[in-house]
Amino acid sequence: MKNQETLTQEAIQLLKDLIETPSFSSEEQQTAALIEQWFIQNNIPFERENNNIWAFNKHFDKNKPTVLLNSHHDTVRPNQAYTKDPFKAIVEDGKLYGLGSNDAGGCLVSLLASFVYFYEKENLNHNIVIVASAEEESSGKNGLNSVLKHLPELECAIVGEPTLMQLAVAEKGLLVLDIKVKGTPSHAAHQNDDNVIYKTMSVIDWFKNYAFEKISEQLGPVKMTVTQINAGKQHNVVPSDCDLVVDIRVNDCYNNTEILETVRANVDAEVNPRSMHLNASSIPVSHGLVQAGIALGRTTYGSPTLSDQSVLSCKSLKLGPGDSLRSHSADEFIYLNEIEEGIDLYIKILGDFLK
Image: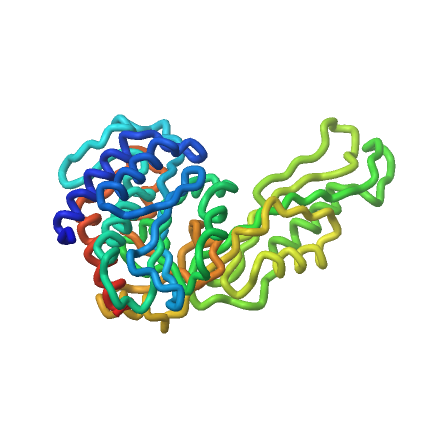
């Protein structure tokens, strides 16, 4: 079995190769091939569907619970403010630059190295399955969500996203609503007691002032924000309808269905969700994964950003090297020592949890 130092160096080289291989969401064929080659070189059987690749530990036992390790290999398109080549792996001053280095290539290769470390170990108290997933950045239909049907029931998961290796024990969900308020169209010179603009003002006021009762210890309250409005084409015509878009960040006290039902019960308008599957997620601080991290000096927090946790129904912990503030930024980078630390901490946390 390879030692941790060797796995770390191979993981860094894989990350360099991934950076230099474009992998926009739904276009990850080439990076999927690189990950396949990683498994082949480590003599690990794997499965692939579309651009998702997954593998199980060697001594998989169907009578044991299963922990999922997951991160993604797709990227957004490069920020126009880049001063370096986003598809060239450049190392300067201990930083590895390149598109996807921080989000989430560093997390992915660190989890892959950790999986190889545990692959042949016997007598683990959990099975391990690792999924290198596609279409995370676009919340596409052929991402992690499409793989879950091929996996056994999951007891818990570590989702690799840049958290500075702190423990994101909760993550807000997302519900985007298209709202259509209807009224009576008329000439502006005539009396109109069903003016859709005025009706929309009361709808907006409700979104501004309504407070969901349950407040999460980690994520705080549900946050609703009107982000777009569109109505009317002429100064002298009262329109028949007004369209709004509302962005709702859901805490782990509610699911998206409950939020939608509350909105529909209180708003005099058509309410249509763009999707329902991006739910909030959490894991109890008492869970073994979290306790293993706390024992290593890691702190817990609630994350406002969305990840593949949103498609999981099991308890899940977001944890990984890198800093989310660098994600999608120009000249994205990750420190090489963050990858070394990430692999070391993943191995220590899993080693404690799996013993």
